[in-house]
Amino acid sequence: MNILTVKDLNKTYSGQFAPAIKNITLAIKKGEIFGLVGESGSGKTTLLRIIAGLEDADSGSVRLLKESITGPSQNLVPGHTHIRLVHQNFNLQPNISIRQNILYSLKGYDLQYQLDRLDKMIDLCDLSALQHKLPRQLSGGEMQRVALARALADEPMLLLLDEPFSNVDIIRRQELKHEVSDIIRKSGTTAIFVTHDTTEALTLSDTIGVMRDGSLIQIGTPHHIYNHPATSYVARFFGNANIISIIKLQPYLRIKQQASLFNKQDVVCIRAESIQICQEAEADLTGKLKKVYYLGMYELWDVQIARNISLQLLHFQKTPPPEKLFLKIVWEQVHVFQ
Ligand SMILES: Nc1ncnc2c1ncn2[C@@H]1O[C@H](COP(=O)(O)OP(=O)(O)OP(=O)(O)O)[C@@H](O)[C@H]1O
Image (cartoon, rainbow, N blue to C red; front, side, top):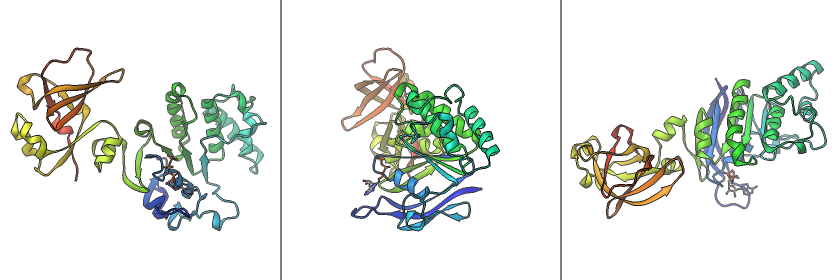
């Protein structure tokens, strides 16, 4: 069942020439975690705010189940009671305790429901040791858990998170990502989170939407987006990708039949991890090491195949490179762009 349906959404801010978002169509199922990724300025926040009812669209529609979500021009109080947006700066009330902060978002409900939900949120977000503290006594990661508890308190249908980890230091971020995703999954809430971090999107999402210049250029599971990118842009955005045409590569292949698996005009994506160093007898290509990028756990090697062709591969062993490199391509992992 789709909780959210977005159809042909467009928006150009007044005074701007280029649209912030163009013809966005997407559907999100109940319980799904949807990661919206894209470079800065690609339109992620604009889309999120229109979905939240905090920004007007020029055209198109947003529906939460069957209900139409409209922007501030049509509502006295912008936003929607069943949609919660968690801001980058958490927006906690500074002078009241964590417990009161959570209760604040439950005001207006029956007292028993307020107390039940407060207990559930303190438990779900692991806040019992922090509940009597003030927001300023908490770390960024702890504040994020409180913001989440507040947002989830009255069981919203849709949770929206805009760059949820951007205000948390890098050491704590890794841990917090998993905590937040566990909390959302345990609560069963449908969520959209905006990020420009592709690893975050791959790790935490059920579905990823990739935005570029206001358009949603690909939607798919993390596995599909990584292994079957729609364009060379998506391929490069999600990791080290060698984008090359078969016609350019073919003259340098030692076993020419390999190229017959493809059309000459095909442009392919060979992930850096799909190129392996091997013995001469099994090699598809030979090359010379041009440059080494040290990345801690592994190295990224730039290998020159011909004057105008170089390929990147990952190297995990700490052995010195030989003079001549023999390379094998894992052909099953090569993706052909349509
Ligand atoms: N209030 C506004 N008025 C005018 N232009 C705006 C406004 N908000 C955003 N824009 C423009 O709309 C485009 C999309 O912006 P948006 O903030 O949605 O992108 P984003 O992908 O969320 O970027 P970031 O990752 O930097 O937050 C950008 O070109 C931006 O400059």
